[in-house]
Each structure stands twice: as C-alpha cells, then as structure tokens.
Amino acid sequence: MTGISYANRLRLLLIIAITLAILALYFSPITQSRNFYNYADQRTFLGVPNFFNIISNLPFLLVGILGLKRFHPHHLNAIEPRIRLLYPGFFVGLIAAFFGSSYYHLTPNAFTLMLDRIPITIAFITLYCIVLSEFIKPAIGHRLIIPAVLYGLLSVVYWYATDVIGGRGDLSAYVLVQVIPIIHLPLIIGLFKSPFSHGRYYLYALLAYVLAKWAESNDEQLYALLGGVSGHSVKHLLAALGGYMIYLGWIKRMKGTESGS
View 1 (tube, one colour):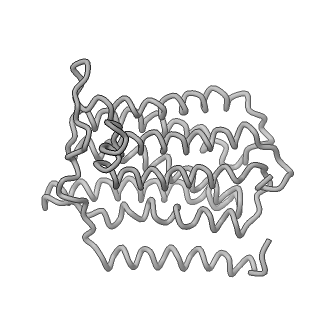
View 2 (cartoon, helix red, strand yellow):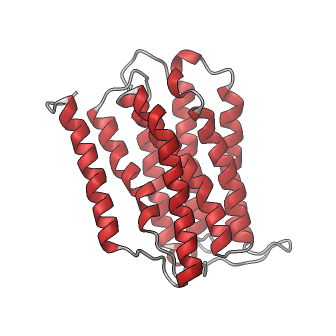
View 3 (cartoon, one colour):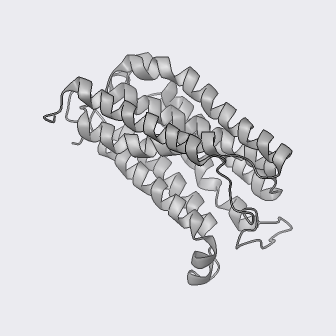
C-alpha cells in the first residue's frame, strides 16, 4: 500500500506509542481541571438532576442494543474469527457506557467518574484491538486484548486512587488509553490493508469521537451558542454517533474487497 516496508510500518507505530508514553511520564501528574464537575447544564427535569447530561447518554444504549441484535445473524465471513468475541464486546461496552455515564451524571464525584470511565476504556481498547487484528495481523489483537484491557482498568483505578489520596488524580496513565488509539488508528488504516470492505467507517467513527472531545472541552461555549444544549450533551451524542458508524461499517462490509471501498 505504501513504499514503506511492513517492518518499518510496525516500527513507526511502536515508536509513536513509546514516545507518547515517555511524554505522559514526563508531564505527569496530568490532572483534570478543578471545575471538572461543574458542568454548564445542571438543570433538573422531572425531578432528575443533570437531566440532559443523563438523557443524552441514551444513544449509547440504543446503538449497543442495535449492534448486538444485528450481530447474531451477521454473516460470519465478514468478521475475523480469531477475535470474534470482541465484536459484540464493543457493543456491550457501549451499553455499559450508558449506565456508567448516566450514574455518574446523576451524582458526579470521583467514584462515579471511575465507573463512567471503565466501560469507555473497555470499548475503546476493544475497538483498537479489532482494528489491529483486521488491518495488521489477527494474532495481534487476540494477544493484546487482555493485557491492554487490564492496563486500561488499572489506569482508571490509579487515577481514582491518586485522586482520593492527593485530591487531584493523575491521568497520565489513562490518557494513553485514548491518545495512542486516536493517533494510531488513521495510520493503521492508511498504512495497512484489511481484507474487509468499508474500513473507512472506522475513520468516520474516529472523527466523531475527536469532535466529541472538542465539544466536551467547549461545554459552556456551546451551551450559550446552542441555546441550552451543552457541549457535554453534544459530546455524548457525537461519541454515540461514532459507535453507530462502527455499526454501519460492520453491517455493510464484505470480505475480499478493498478496505476503503
């Protein structure tokens, strides 16, 4: 696909991951803002506090259920058999994200935020391992999924433990869970070839997620601009849209065609 040898493409991904890990260690502790829990939209509706930040999680549940419902009869030649269980695992992660995020916004604090971040971490890592397996080598995702998920879980727990002890948790381990896949995924899709069609939907999903992070960082500005729709609610909708893009790509895909077709 490119003039770069297969080995050098792998080295590039490894160098990027190591560099990001060194930077995270160098800049640690990485902490979230002091007003992190002070969301722009804290309105109570029907007796439910932070109602719109909760209800905007509903698309996670819908996409997760839709994915599980359609996955069972999905043609088996359109999935990688060595990581077959990871595909529905991604949709289970979206469903768990609905419950975790809803519970967190009902009572925002460090403990409920930890419960919110755990399913997001699992879904993100699962998707990353799927892409590694489809575009590079099936054995990679198969072997990496357990240690990667364990790292992700420990990174969230580490943040919570340092938050309880020091008052401001260290996110340096956790940020790698998101930053490495965000940088790796477009490179993997651009540098390697998948045997499955509609690989571009992974890029659509990544774009939706990047926009979701942007909306999250502009919570108050969007709340004022959109007349009562906060950036954090938009974040939930865009992140769920990313999950829906994954779903669309999977139900459209076939084996034996170009990844971007």
